[in-house]
Image (cartoon, rainbow, N blue to C red):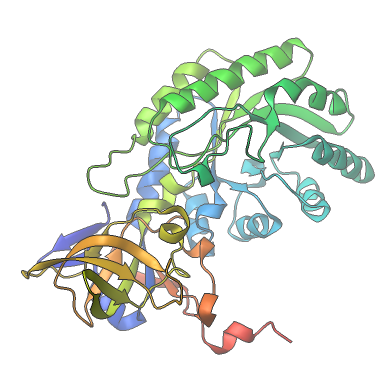
Length: 413
């Protein structure tokens, strides 16, 4: 994993030893590599540079203000799905002409704010939302550009909880309803229907699905133009997967770009993309300390101080993350479940993992935890959220301090 490497028997993030970070900041601890983050952003921007493309980072993947600030400085925009994400993006310096607002259930407050700001696009998923946008724009006498999100009913090979392009999911508008929904704003004074959008799922490891979605939307866009709608952009969402375990090979960003651009070349449509995991996933790890080990008959457990409230993906999605000792050692190997202290059987970070005789006080790190780690974390079991640090070369910056116990009830009455 670029940015995180083994040197003299110990793992480093760029030029900083993980063990030293544990000593200074404690564990559990999220650690991010600016080198990896920058490289991923540049790969996206460079791979699509030959075609008019707006890259809008999916803020939900990781919305730490310092991470967002870096991403926007590198030249990317933002895909947001709530007023909180919108305000975080604004605070972090995003250009409003690079902001798209997605989501199946936007409130009046959220729509009002987005329209007032004049963001690039509201991605609309229902007729009732479009009616509300009409009302608000008329009250404000303010223009707003919208895209209709289509549900293309494309089945992708991923976890069903993150497959979003099927009719049985809550997302988008069935393509057969597109024209009737579009008629709501045809010729409207303030609401410009200028785009089509879709998002077929997350952690997708084969490119054919993206190509199929691109062809579907390009065909629909031409059809809508023929019917008098001024379609000028197509938003294909995100979903590009990353390699979470050894032997798993994810498509490169360059190959992803080639697959999509061969559909878009010679069309009049601007392309919009919403990558998230593929930008920040490999840029972060979760560092944890072993509290102890124990056995139940034929089951071996390694109990660590990180838990499902810090990284819920293994419990929620049965997601696999590699778990690696910070310091290599020659010792007999054991098959062990790496589990946390939370009072749930589902509190595990990895099951049946092979580790060299783990023992109390040793450090482990969970790879590829930069996406959907802290943003999905919680205070379950009244556990304070952990700290986050950003490493750039040999410089370390605390970008979120560790929560104190007293802060757990700071907002309660």
